[in-house]
Image (cartoon, rainbow, N blue to C red; front, side, top):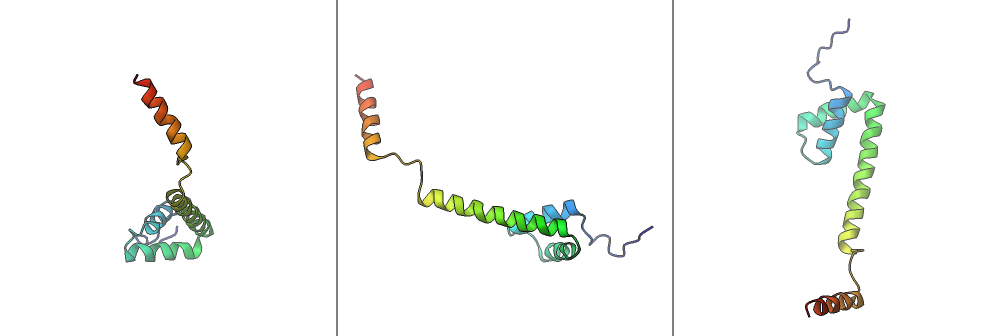
Length: 92
């Protein structure tokens, strides 16, 4: 039987995963970050999750930034004119 002296401070993988997401949002306290750091020292799977999650978030933010700075859904001037003519003609 294993007895953990610091059972309240040792996270399981589910808790570490949720805490890593909270940390990524900037909402984790110092004590939570320390607990996560301790868990990541010995858990390769959670370290992999944190790394992959960080990459996904970085790419997602880059895509959102690109969409807002260069929206692909802007109509050309010609298309706007055609639509406006159709609107004007439908009311007659």
